[in-house]
Length: 457
Ligand SMILES: *Cc1c(COP(=O)(O)O)cnc(C)c1O
Image 1: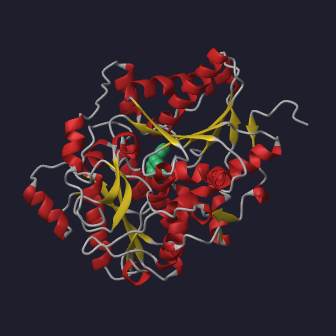
Image 2: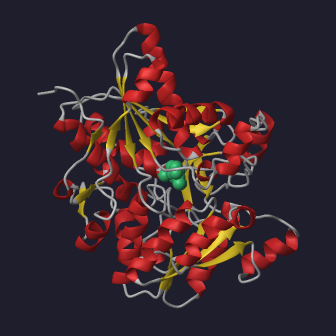
Image 3: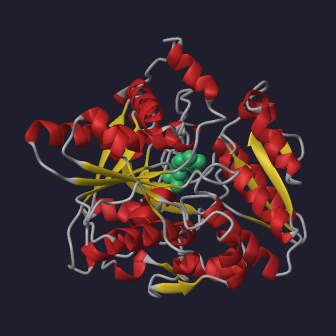
C-alpha cells in the first residue's frame, strides 16, 4: 500500500475529528491546580465564573474526561480552514540530502495566520452560548487578537483587545486586521483601567508588556457587565481545543501507515505543542508506544531549560490566579526578541507536569539560527514561516542533519504553527545581518526567580 506518499496528505471534510482529546485523563500525575494568590487554595468553579466563561471553566477543571464533543457550530467553522494538510517536506529533505523523512502539519492556512483560531472559535462559541455581550483579551504580537476578533465576528460578539503598546505602534497592520473584524483595540497600558493608570503613573513612557495587558483585560472583564476574559494559550482548555491538530495529524499518518519517531513543536505558552503532541503523549502515557517529543523555546526566554517548576503569577499586575509551571518569574522581561508569541515567562501546567515527569525534552535555540532555518525552509518548501514556528523548523533540521550523519531513516514530524507575513521587520533584520542573539545571564534569571510568590511554593 505505502507506494509513494503524496506531497500533501489531506483528510476528507467528514474525517475532521468530532471530539477533542483531554490528555489529562491519561496522566497519572495530574497538572497542579490554579490557586488563589491570596491564600493558596485551589480555585473553585464558582470563583472562576466571574472572570472566565462557565463552560470553559468546566473544561479547565476536568482532569478525567478523555474526550469532549466539539459543538456542531464550531465544527462548521473549522470546515472553513480544516482539515489542515500534513505535508511531506520532499523538497527540504532533498536539499538537506538526509535519509530522514520530514512531515509538517501546516496550521497557517487561514486569515489569522496561525493555529490560534482553533481555540478562539471554541471560546467565542461558549461565550455566545452563555449569553454574554463580549469578551476581553490581551495580545502581544497580535496573532491571538486577530484569531479572537475573527471568531467574535462570526458569532456576533463584542471583542475588546488590549494590545501591548510597542506592538500597537510597530504592527499597525495586525491592528487594522483586528479592527476590520470589528474588535476595539486599545494600546496597553491605557488610562481606561485602574491597573493601567497605576502602571502609567509608576512607569511613565512604558511601552507595555503582555503581563500588563493581561491585567488590564481581566480588570475590564470583571468590571463590565456581560463580559468575560479569554486567554489564547497556557490554560488547559486551550491545550484541549488545540488537540484537533494532533488528532488530525494522527489520522493522516495512519492513512499511510506512517510511524513518527520524533515529534517537534515550538513552545510559547505551550498550547500548540500540547495539542499537536496530545494523542502521542496519550499513547506514551498508556504504555502503547514511544516517541521522542521535543519542545523548542527561544534562548532569550528559556522557561523549560532554565526556569523553575513553581507556582507563579501569569500577569505583571499579580491579579490572576497562580499557575504551577516552568517559569522565569512573572517579572522577567525578555529582550526585544521578535518571536513575540514565544515571549511568555511561563508555560502550560499540563506540559510543565509532563516535562517534570520526563515525558519529553526541551531545547533552547538562538534567534539567528532560527532565521537561518526559516530561510532555508522558505527557499525549499515555499511557505514563509512565522518566527515562532521556525523554532520547530530549526530543531527538525538539526535532527534531519543528525540522520544524515548516522544514516538513520527517522521519521520527523513538526507543527508549522503559522506564517510570517506580518513579521517581515524581523526577516529584514536577518537579511540585513543586524539581528542579534540575546541570552539572559544567570544572575538576571536568579534575580527574577527570587521574586516568585511565597504562596504555593
Ligand atoms: C502564538 C503562537 C505560537 C505560540 O503558541 P503556544 O501555543 O502559546 O505555544 C506559535 N506560533 C505562532 C505562529 C503563534 O501565533
